[in-house]
Length: 141
Length: 77
Image (tube, rainbow over all chains, first blue to last red; front, side, top):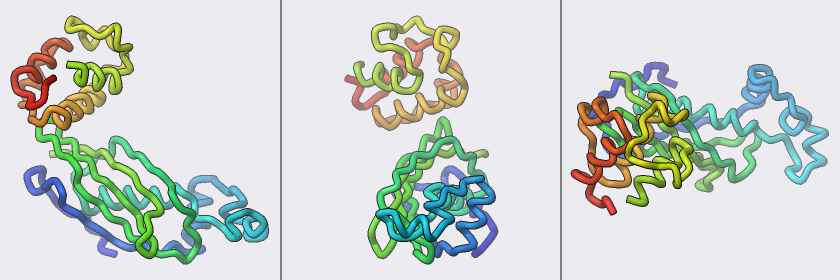
């Protein structure tokens, strides 16, 4: 992963432009997120417990996936000058350890006067949408 | 201008029946700098135009903002 945020100005950014990246969620990701957030709900961290639920196995924390939205806006669109203002998220399907999600971002609107940009975000697993949301950010110029 | 009022209601949580052009930020508890920018951004999307920076900065009342929309909005009904 390139750890350098995109350097974009407001005039560089166009409505409809897209960015994407992929991420495979590992066991250590889920463990790290449990410690980071303090969410040790057994559905995420206890295989025996999760096996008895309708899901059959552990789920990735929804907000771990949500954190990928931060990567989208902080690193890609708009990148370096991003100030995160608001985020909506809908968790549509369960995601499991070992799954790879493709994170797609599309610039839906841009306000020149307020420098506010909305980025529609969709996460796909094998082409099926598992998470969707809208990030609202401001470009710091 | 129902849409204008609906956006104002949604952003600032002002009851529709209490919306009037004389309202100022002091009358609306939810009117802070960030919500004001959300308000402008939502109006731009709905009415299909861009405010100028002067229009954003100089508006003192709800009526000032509405006047800009009435003057330049593409769908100001």
